[in-house]
Length: 284
Image (cartoon, rainbow, N blue to C red):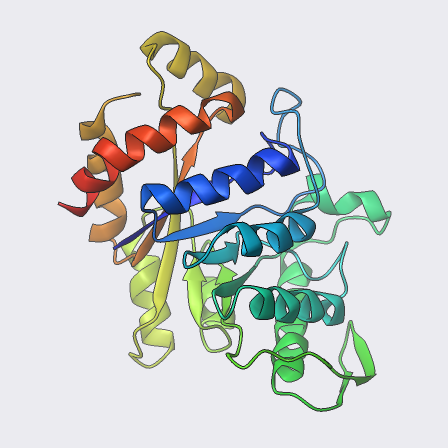
């Protein structure tokens, strides 16, 4: 299992995120994922910089660590054509280190454009069309599309990376797995459910694929403060419980796990803890 670090745009400003990205690479994390939200989950988190601008800077502050959106909604705030352009640009800037993580979105972040909030089935329809459009643009050349929800007229990515950008899609159950497993390169989920991994591979006719999970932890020198911060911002400092929680994802068939350190003011200490204790324990 590869172990990743989460660049939480909800709990740090853009300059701090760029610094944490470089620090996470030095600490030895295998990959880094970044949330793409217009608003923080809770006011206590206090931040929401534009993820794609930060990603551009991160490509230049890091050298080899893989990068990923976790996740972008390509249907409401963004048109899928624009998402394809942004992803291709980041892939070029990172020299092929970027994976485009996509999801059906959250009302908290997408309602700001005033289009209302569709039901889950409609959001899946929108996301499926968006994935088709983005994939078509990644193929190169001029692209036209006439779907139920989106139209594309002679669009083309003029700067196309040499390495095609992989697409990962967030799923939560059988319906989303059946729809997106045939279309995506990798699965994203936040619960260690073996049924998701098994159905994903079965739907892809047994072809192995990456399955990328995410797990929040709250590291700190003061255990009570770490617990309080977790309850406040996410509704312990010990390695053992973290390893056991990560093992659930490995046992469920996940190939990658991104860790979320809760608390924007604890990142430097967490990265030092990760380098010296946590990552060696997880890999052992």
